[in-house]
Image (cartoon, rainbow, N blue to C red; front, side):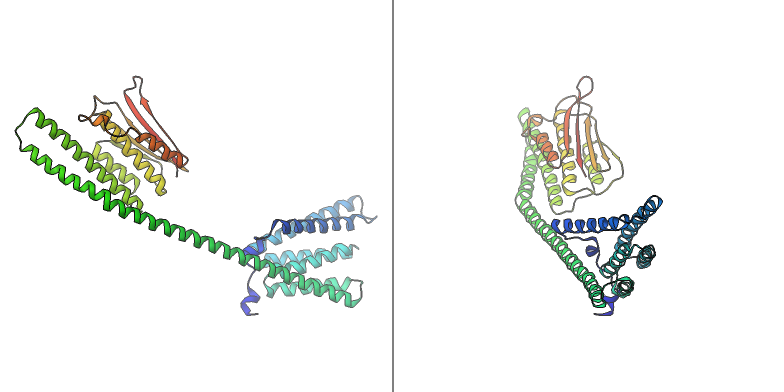
Length: 391
């Protein structure tokens, strides 16, 4: 045994009893109850313990129980001197009990101190305390010297075995925690690798496709603008310009999704301000901003995009207000428009699948949140979208 082994405390996992099975916990509780019951019986079975003597004995036993509890707490915090002081107090109580003729109580206290010192203290402190406690036990034991010696040796061995057993369980708990952490890190690494692969696929297919569409639409716009003015030419030009705008927005959203997959998203407040500046919306942020989970942040971004798109489609010219509120354990978003004077460019109000808000509501519910959308104002001229998700 090295010098470090002599001065080292048992691990916290060992001192807290982690890793014990339910059956072993029940056995330990039964043993404690039997010892406590035996102490009460041995104390109050005497004829002279009555009246105020019984009250004093009860108070003494409760004080002993409090000292034992305090000793366990101090060893859990690796406080050596308070632990030694409590053991000295318990052993002194054993001396007082012996002087009062309560030899059973005295012997139990000394034996418990010896076993507990070896089990829960560093060896350099626990072994001397255990020998002192067992020495006190041997001086008042009325059995043959060989029996007393064997009893003392058995108690020393019991304390050492309990210490080894607790350390083995503590080591097993630490290894189990390390294995769980390694598995979690491996799963996170695999998830990041999969997200990176999906991001590459989206970039290679969708982003390239949208970029090519923008090039072709821009070329078509330039070609159409060279034609003579007329109703047909102006209508086609309007549709091409609208399609180019939608393709540009789709490309921007695709890049946002790629940034989210790669964990490179801009801060939420900054993103909302940039998005609002493009649409001429007003942004207000309440509460203390903090980093959100990737799922919550992405949900807020998607809801804002969908709400602004709907405002452009169905309420052209409306004033839009965006309010983001950071709560204690959630984040709330409200996007409200004042109601516009009409729809956007021709055909834009009927574009899309019509399932945008439904998809956003499902996304919020998957996170344990809610999404509400509906008309606002007495005449129903405005529209609001309200999102709340845990964060």
